[in-house]
Length: 320
Image (cartoon, rainbow, N blue to C red; front, top):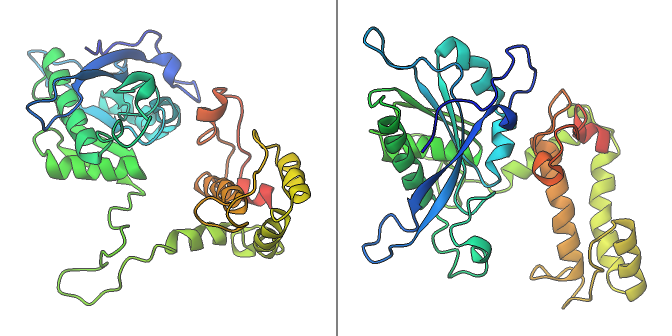
Protein backbone atom coordinates (compact mmCIF):
# COMPACT_ATOMS: atom_id res chain seq x y z
CA UNK A 1 0.00 0.00 0.00
CA UNK A 2 0.93 3.65 -0.14
CA UNK A 3 3.55 4.83 2.29
CA UNK A 4 2.41 8.44 2.27
CA UNK A 5 5.99 9.67 2.52
CA UNK A 6 8.21 11.03 -0.25
CA UNK A 7 11.38 9.37 -1.38
CA UNK A 8 12.80 12.87 -1.85
CA UNK A 9 11.12 15.99 -0.44
CA UNK A 10 10.54 18.75 -2.97
CA UNK A 11 12.02 22.15 -2.44
CA UNK A 12 9.25 24.64 -1.79
CA UNK A 13 11.03 26.94 -4.20
CA UNK A 14 11.28 24.28 -6.92
CA UNK A 15 9.24 25.40 -9.93
CA UNK A 16 8.31 21.91 -11.13
CA UNK A 17 7.99 19.28 -8.37
CA UNK A 18 6.72 16.01 -9.80
CA UNK A 19 7.41 12.31 -10.12
CA UNK A 20 10.96 12.60 -8.75
CA UNK A 21 9.51 13.81 -5.44
CA UNK A 22 6.94 11.03 -5.06
CA UNK A 23 6.71 7.54 -3.70
CA UNK A 24 5.48 4.93 -6.17
CA UNK A 25 3.36 2.05 -4.95
CA UNK A 26 1.17 -0.65 -6.44
CA UNK A 27 -2.37 -1.39 -5.37
CA UNK A 28 -4.06 -4.71 -6.13
CA UNK A 29 -7.37 -4.30 -7.94
CA UNK A 30 -9.95 -6.82 -9.18
CA UNK A 31 -10.02 -7.13 -12.93
CA UNK A 32 -13.82 -6.94 -12.73
CA UNK A 33 -15.38 -5.24 -9.72
CA UNK A 34 -18.85 -6.40 -10.67
CA UNK A 35 -18.38 -10.12 -11.34
CA UNK A 36 -18.60 -13.02 -8.93
CA UNK A 37 -16.86 -15.40 -11.33
CA UNK A 38 -13.92 -13.30 -12.61
CA UNK A 39 -11.27 -13.61 -9.91
CA UNK A 40 -8.17 -12.23 -11.65
CA UNK A 41 -6.45 -9.14 -10.29
CA UNK A 42 -3.90 -6.60 -11.49
CA UNK A 43 -1.59 -3.99 -10.00
CA UNK A 44 -2.50 -0.31 -10.24
CA UNK A 45 0.34 2.23 -10.12
CA UNK A 46 -0.06 5.09 -7.65
CA UNK A 47 2.18 8.10 -7.00
CA UNK A 48 1.97 9.90 -3.67
CA UNK A 49 3.62 12.74 -1.81
CA UNK A 50 3.13 13.13 1.93
CA UNK A 51 5.74 15.73 2.83
CA UNK A 52 3.11 18.35 3.62
CA UNK A 53 0.47 16.03 5.02
CA UNK A 54 -0.90 16.82 8.47
CA UNK A 55 -1.08 13.41 10.08
CA UNK A 56 -3.91 12.64 12.51
CA UNK A 57 -3.18 12.83 16.22
CA UNK A 58 -5.04 13.28 19.47
CA UNK A 59 -5.17 17.03 19.04
CA UNK A 60 -6.07 17.46 15.39
CA UNK A 61 -7.76 15.75 12.50
CA UNK A 62 -5.87 14.49 9.49
CA UNK A 63 -5.22 16.83 6.62
CA UNK A 64 -7.20 16.29 3.42
CA UNK A 65 -6.29 13.89 0.63
CA UNK A 66 -6.12 15.49 -2.80
CA UNK A 67 -6.81 12.56 -5.11
CA UNK A 68 -6.07 12.92 -8.81
CA UNK A 69 -8.26 10.73 -11.03
CA UNK A 70 -5.88 9.54 -13.73
CA UNK A 71 -6.80 10.19 -17.36
CA UNK A 72 -6.25 8.28 -20.58
CA UNK A 73 -2.44 8.42 -20.37
CA UNK A 74 0.46 7.58 -18.12
CA UNK A 75 -0.25 9.11 -14.71
CA UNK A 76 3.25 10.63 -14.73
CA UNK A 77 1.92 13.25 -17.13
CA UNK A 78 -0.54 14.47 -14.51
CA UNK A 79 1.86 14.22 -11.58
CA UNK A 80 4.19 16.58 -13.43
CA UNK A 81 1.58 18.94 -14.84
CA UNK A 82 -1.12 19.32 -12.14
CA UNK A 83 0.40 22.38 -10.54
CA UNK A 84 -2.68 23.32 -8.50
CA UNK A 85 -2.24 20.31 -6.24
CA UNK A 86 1.44 21.00 -5.61
CA UNK A 87 0.83 24.73 -5.10
CA UNK A 88 -1.82 24.23 -2.39
CA UNK A 89 -0.63 21.06 -0.66
CA UNK A 90 1.41 22.86 2.01
CA UNK A 91 -1.23 25.39 3.05
CA UNK A 92 -3.86 22.64 3.20
CA UNK A 93 -1.64 20.13 4.96
CA UNK A 94 -2.68 17.74 2.22
CA UNK A 95 -1.56 14.31 1.10
CA UNK A 96 -1.23 14.15 -2.68
CA UNK A 97 -2.27 10.95 -4.45
CA UNK A 98 -2.18 10.37 -8.22
CA UNK A 99 -3.84 7.15 -9.36
CA UNK A 100 -3.16 5.68 -12.79
CA UNK A 101 -6.13 4.71 -14.96
CA UNK A 102 -6.39 1.03 -15.82
CA UNK A 103 -4.99 0.14 -19.27
CA UNK A 104 -2.73 3.24 -19.37
CA UNK A 105 0.90 3.83 -18.50
CA UNK A 106 2.24 0.88 -16.55
CA UNK A 107 -1.16 -0.16 -15.20
CA UNK A 108 -1.87 -2.94 -17.67
CA UNK A 109 -4.47 -5.40 -16.30
CA UNK A 110 -3.45 -8.18 -18.70
CA UNK A 111 0.18 -7.23 -19.16
CA UNK A 112 1.40 -7.01 -22.73
CA UNK A 113 -1.84 -8.44 -24.08
CA UNK A 114 -4.10 -5.83 -22.46
CA UNK A 115 -4.91 -4.04 -25.72
CA UNK A 116 -4.85 -7.04 -28.05
CA UNK A 117 -8.50 -6.93 -29.08
CA UNK A 118 -12.03 -6.15 -27.90
CA UNK A 119 -12.13 -9.16 -25.61
CA UNK A 120 -9.05 -8.04 -23.67
CA UNK A 121 -10.31 -4.44 -23.55
CA UNK A 122 -13.73 -5.35 -22.16
CA UNK A 123 -12.74 -4.12 -18.68
CA UNK A 124 -11.69 -0.69 -19.97
CA UNK A 125 -14.80 1.18 -18.83
CA UNK A 126 -15.41 4.27 -16.74
CA UNK A 127 -17.46 2.14 -14.32
CA UNK A 128 -14.47 -0.11 -13.62
CA UNK A 129 -12.14 2.90 -13.35
CA UNK A 130 -14.42 4.60 -10.82
CA UNK A 131 -14.58 1.42 -8.77
CA UNK A 132 -10.77 1.25 -8.84
CA UNK A 133 -10.55 4.76 -7.41
CA UNK A 134 -13.22 4.24 -4.75
CA UNK A 135 -11.55 1.01 -3.60
CA UNK A 136 -8.13 2.65 -3.54
CA UNK A 137 -9.38 5.59 -1.46
CA UNK A 138 -11.06 3.33 1.09
CA UNK A 139 -8.00 1.14 1.58
CA UNK A 140 -5.63 4.10 1.58
CA UNK A 141 -7.48 5.82 4.44
CA UNK A 142 -7.46 2.64 6.49
CA UNK A 143 -3.76 1.99 5.89
CA UNK A 144 -2.88 5.54 6.93
CA UNK A 145 -4.98 5.36 10.08
CA UNK A 146 -7.06 8.28 8.82
CA UNK A 147 -10.55 6.90 8.13
CA UNK A 148 -12.12 10.33 8.62
CA UNK A 149 -9.76 12.27 6.36
CA UNK A 150 -11.56 14.44 3.84
CA UNK A 151 -10.95 13.52 0.21
CA UNK A 152 -11.18 15.84 -2.78
CA UNK A 153 -11.27 14.18 -6.19
CA UNK A 154 -9.45 16.25 -8.82
CA UNK A 155 -9.16 15.91 -12.56
CA UNK A 156 -9.17 17.70 -15.89
CA UNK A 157 -10.88 16.81 -19.15
CA UNK A 158 -11.73 13.07 -18.95
CA UNK A 159 -10.11 13.01 -15.52
CA UNK A 160 -12.44 15.84 -14.52
CA UNK A 161 -15.40 13.82 -15.71
CA UNK A 162 -14.18 10.93 -13.57
CA UNK A 163 -13.79 13.24 -10.56
CA UNK A 164 -17.37 14.49 -10.94
CA UNK A 165 -18.76 11.01 -11.48
CA UNK A 166 -16.76 9.65 -8.54
CA UNK A 167 -18.46 12.16 -6.27
CA UNK A 168 -21.85 11.30 -7.76
CA UNK A 169 -21.55 7.51 -7.73
CA UNK A 170 -19.38 7.04 -4.64
CA UNK A 171 -20.29 9.92 -2.30
CA UNK A 172 -18.89 8.00 0.68
CA UNK A 173 -15.47 7.90 -0.98
CA UNK A 174 -14.98 11.59 -1.74
CA UNK A 175 -16.26 14.69 0.01
CA UNK A 176 -15.88 17.04 -2.96
CA UNK A 177 -14.72 17.10 -6.56
CA UNK A 178 -12.83 19.68 -8.56
CA UNK A 179 -13.67 18.89 -12.19
CA UNK A 180 -11.76 21.17 -14.56
CA UNK A 181 -12.73 21.34 -18.24
CA UNK A 182 -14.92 18.31 -17.69
CA UNK A 183 -17.33 17.83 -20.63
CA UNK A 184 -19.82 15.66 -18.77
CA UNK A 185 -22.58 16.64 -21.21
CA UNK A 186 -20.50 16.17 -24.35
CA UNK A 187 -22.29 13.14 -25.70
CA UNK A 188 -24.29 12.90 -28.89
CA UNK A 189 -28.01 12.90 -28.20
CA UNK A 190 -27.83 14.71 -24.85
CA UNK A 191 -29.67 17.97 -24.53
CA UNK A 192 -28.01 20.96 -22.93
CA UNK A 193 -29.74 23.24 -20.48
CA UNK A 194 -31.96 22.95 -17.44
CA UNK A 195 -34.77 20.54 -16.84
CA UNK A 196 -37.97 21.21 -18.70
CA UNK A 197 -36.34 23.75 -20.99
CA UNK A 198 -36.15 23.39 -24.73
CA UNK A 199 -32.47 23.09 -25.54
CA UNK A 200 -30.35 21.99 -28.50
CA UNK A 201 -28.75 18.60 -28.71
CA UNK A 202 -25.03 18.39 -28.01
CA UNK A 203 -23.05 19.67 -30.98
CA UNK A 204 -20.08 17.41 -31.70
CA UNK A 205 -18.38 20.10 -33.78
CA UNK A 206 -18.31 22.68 -30.98
CA UNK A 207 -14.92 21.46 -29.77
CA UNK A 208 -13.40 21.70 -33.24
CA UNK A 209 -14.66 25.26 -33.63
CA UNK A 210 -12.68 26.14 -30.50
CA UNK A 211 -9.59 24.42 -31.95
CA UNK A 212 -10.05 26.38 -35.17
CA UNK A 213 -10.40 29.65 -33.29
CA UNK A 214 -6.99 29.07 -31.70
CA UNK A 215 -5.55 29.19 -35.24
CA UNK A 216 -7.32 32.46 -36.07
CA UNK A 217 -6.22 36.11 -35.83
CA UNK A 218 -8.72 36.51 -32.98
CA UNK A 219 -6.50 34.20 -30.93
CA UNK A 220 -3.26 35.78 -32.14
CA UNK A 221 -2.45 33.38 -34.99
CA UNK A 222 -1.51 34.37 -38.55
CA UNK A 223 -4.40 35.26 -40.82
CA UNK A 224 -3.33 32.68 -43.41
CA UNK A 225 -3.23 29.76 -40.95
CA UNK A 226 -6.81 28.49 -41.23
CA UNK A 227 -7.12 28.71 -45.02
CA UNK A 228 -3.68 27.14 -45.46
CA UNK A 229 -4.52 24.20 -43.22
CA UNK A 230 -7.86 23.66 -44.90
CA UNK A 231 -6.18 23.65 -48.30
CA UNK A 232 -3.93 20.79 -47.20
CA UNK A 233 -6.80 18.31 -46.96
CA UNK A 234 -7.54 18.43 -50.69
CA UNK A 235 -3.82 18.43 -51.48
CA UNK A 236 -3.30 15.31 -49.36
CA UNK A 237 -6.20 13.53 -51.04
CA UNK A 238 -4.76 14.39 -54.43
CA UNK A 239 -1.24 13.25 -53.54
CA UNK A 240 -2.32 9.95 -52.03
CA UNK A 241 -3.89 9.01 -55.34
CA UNK A 242 -0.49 8.08 -56.77
CA UNK A 243 2.50 6.08 -55.61
CA UNK A 244 4.80 9.07 -56.15
CA UNK A 245 2.51 11.30 -54.13
CA UNK A 246 2.33 8.84 -51.26
CA UNK A 247 6.09 8.51 -51.24
CA UNK A 248 6.51 12.28 -51.12
CA UNK A 249 4.06 12.64 -48.22
CA UNK A 250 5.78 9.82 -46.33
CA UNK A 251 9.08 11.66 -46.71
CA UNK A 252 7.76 15.15 -45.91
CA UNK A 253 6.01 14.01 -42.73
CA UNK A 254 8.76 11.53 -41.77
CA UNK A 255 6.25 8.73 -41.29
CA UNK A 256 7.39 5.59 -39.52
CA UNK A 257 5.83 3.50 -42.29
CA UNK A 258 5.20 4.58 -45.88
CA UNK A 259 1.65 5.40 -46.87
CA UNK A 260 -0.06 2.56 -48.70
CA UNK A 261 -2.86 2.71 -51.20
CA UNK A 262 -6.29 2.46 -49.58
CA UNK A 263 -9.75 1.76 -50.92
CA UNK A 264 -9.82 5.41 -51.93
CA UNK A 265 -7.63 8.38 -51.03
CA UNK A 266 -10.24 9.91 -48.71
CA UNK A 267 -11.79 6.68 -47.42
CA UNK A 268 -12.88 7.33 -43.84
CA UNK A 269 -12.48 3.63 -43.13
CA UNK A 270 -8.73 3.71 -43.57
CA UNK A 271 -7.62 5.22 -46.86
CA UNK A 272 -4.09 6.60 -46.88
CA UNK A 273 -5.33 10.18 -46.99
CA UNK A 274 -7.76 9.69 -44.13
CA UNK A 275 -5.12 8.16 -41.89
CA UNK A 276 -2.62 10.94 -42.48
CA UNK A 277 -5.25 13.63 -41.97
CA UNK A 278 -6.29 12.00 -38.71
CA UNK A 279 -2.69 12.25 -37.50
CA UNK A 280 -2.52 15.91 -38.46
CA UNK A 281 -5.88 16.58 -36.87
CA UNK A 282 -4.54 15.15 -33.64
CA UNK A 283 -1.56 17.53 -33.86
CA UNK A 284 -3.81 20.58 -34.02
CA UNK A 285 -6.00 19.11 -31.28
CA UNK A 286 -2.93 18.78 -29.04
CA UNK A 287 -1.69 22.28 -29.87
CA UNK A 288 -5.07 23.72 -28.93
CA UNK A 289 -5.30 21.84 -25.65
CA UNK A 290 -1.78 22.94 -24.76
CA UNK A 291 -2.15 26.50 -26.06
CA UNK A 292 -0.88 28.08 -22.87
CA UNK A 293 0.72 31.55 -22.65
CA UNK A 294 3.89 29.92 -21.28
CA UNK A 295 6.17 27.08 -22.33
CA UNK A 296 5.01 23.69 -21.06
CA UNK A 297 5.85 20.00 -21.33
CA UNK A 298 2.24 19.08 -20.74
CA UNK A 299 0.96 16.75 -23.51
CA UNK A 300 4.46 16.04 -24.85
CA UNK A 301 6.15 14.49 -21.81
CA UNK A 302 4.44 11.15 -22.37
CA UNK A 303 6.03 10.89 -25.81
CA UNK A 304 9.45 12.36 -25.03
CA UNK A 305 9.93 11.21 -21.41
CA UNK A 306 12.16 14.27 -21.15
CA UNK A 307 10.82 17.09 -18.91
CA UNK A 308 13.10 19.62 -20.63
CA UNK A 309 11.31 19.22 -23.99
CA UNK A 310 8.69 21.96 -24.02
CA UNK A 311 6.01 23.27 -26.30
CA UNK A 312 6.58 27.02 -26.75
CA UNK A 313 4.27 29.63 -25.34
CA UNK A 314 1.13 29.91 -27.50
CA UNK A 315 2.14 26.81 -29.52
CA UNK A 316 -0.71 27.17 -32.03
CA UNK A 317 0.58 30.58 -32.99
CA UNK A 318 4.08 29.18 -33.33
CA UNK A 319 2.86 26.33 -35.53
CA UNK A 320 0.92 28.69 -37.74
